[in-house]
Length: 418
Image 1 (cartoon, rainbow, N blue to C red):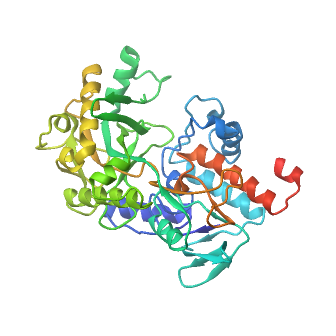
Image 2 (image 1 turned 45 degrees about the vertical axis):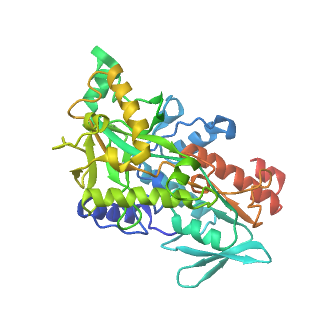
Image 3 (image 1 turned 30 degrees about the horizontal axis):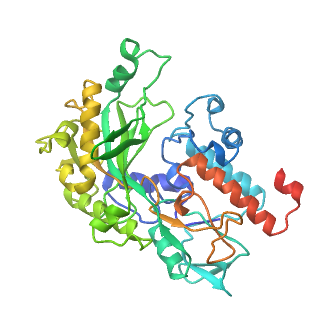
């Protein structure tokens, strides 16, 4: 197991440096490091991927490694940012006991190909790690991996993704909107929501809603501004946040002068918004932000309310920054404000930008063997390869790939089925 970043314990120092001082380590941050982007997130385990495999098996595995047992019965299970690192550590210790070698701060910079097939990877510094099967599961933000896969002749394709902002409200407001007179009852906890709006300007939907959570800086590159959300297990924070995004398709790429036939065009489109958001925030990962009512009205925000985002906010015209992606979000927010009094109130803000909802690239693979059709013995896997959209669906995809490799390498049938 090769990991470019650090283990969960060491990652905490890197995250503190980013959140508190604006110091980004491109190799170890909210996206890179042991457990990837999922380790320091809400740890949401609900999924619509029930047709992809045994969801119960995944939940039981998490509980077995120390996740709260209620994930086995909750309708919308989550582990929490504060508990996930211990779960990930337990997984690693189990795997080491089974003979798996972990190497941290081991960045792969090239795919080694012999006779047209994947034969290993080359690390930064030149060391070659040979393998009879290479699983590429880099998470949704490893742009350098996408580049060296293409350089090695691996077949890639553009995949639609979503981009927008992260909206934040006082948790007490969301509780009142969802629970009414029962808001604050200890048996209910922090309210969540899931929103989908079809408008004449396009569809918009909520993504990764974090009750009682925090907005965090999720950039992986200098000069790029990205936000995401996370929640501790208790979800007792003062704020609720969620992505509010709209889909980016081939038509958006073409309008921006990018070719939809270029598999990395979505990455370029994504990066343009992130760079503009960094400039709008004034640097140091300060986030550009706008009151929701002003975003809908297309007006400047003179000041901004309190926020959970530690790096601070800078008033900015997100409605302009979003360009063609702005109208679907504005229309959706207008409809939501009409239905839910207070949703566009003075304490409601949009923070930019929410751009890493999923990977804009798919590493193509055969539907039966799960190998790359261009590069045998290479197994694209999980969210970063374009085949999952969260922790559980990525785990299910990992199970499928593991079974496919075991079969190809001749593992006994009873060992595979167990």
